[in-house]
Length: 148
Ligand code: SF4
Ligand code: SF4
Image (cartoon, rainbow, N blue to C red):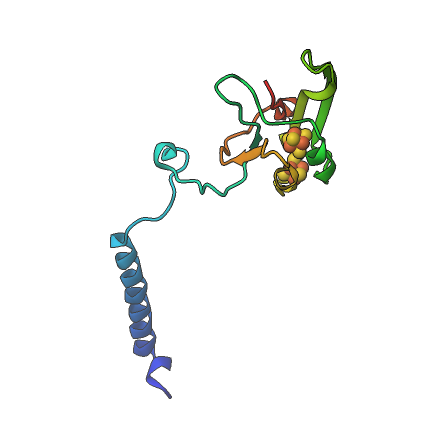
């Protein structure tokens, strides 16, 4: 009969096992904590720049965007997440007509963040930001107009 199979062997094994567990606990107690205390740590929270959370259309200081209403992003989107309406304006100087963007609608609730829209845009008019706190109670609020 082996010692570990005896009465005292069992007690010794239990104490040894307990001490091993306590040793692990003690070591972790003094190890630097890595758990994220979200949302308490919101100010120092680091979200990678590459994280795709929200599609936006940047505007310059005059309120202009780079979109030429070509519709390539809408065509590239596999989810029908983007809808665009356009209007035709006539250039006063040249007299030529051209299509301009009227509304650029984006449904965050239907987006799967594939970035095909951004990649297909010839003007770099849209991009993803890493602003991830977009939860709302009403799904309709996830449909956003991106142009001003
Ligand atoms: S990221 Fe993908 S799913 Fe979302 S709007 Fe762009 S193309 Fe559509
Ligand atoms: S965002 Fe880019 S791809 Fe989409 S309509 Fe505007 S210019 Fe075209």
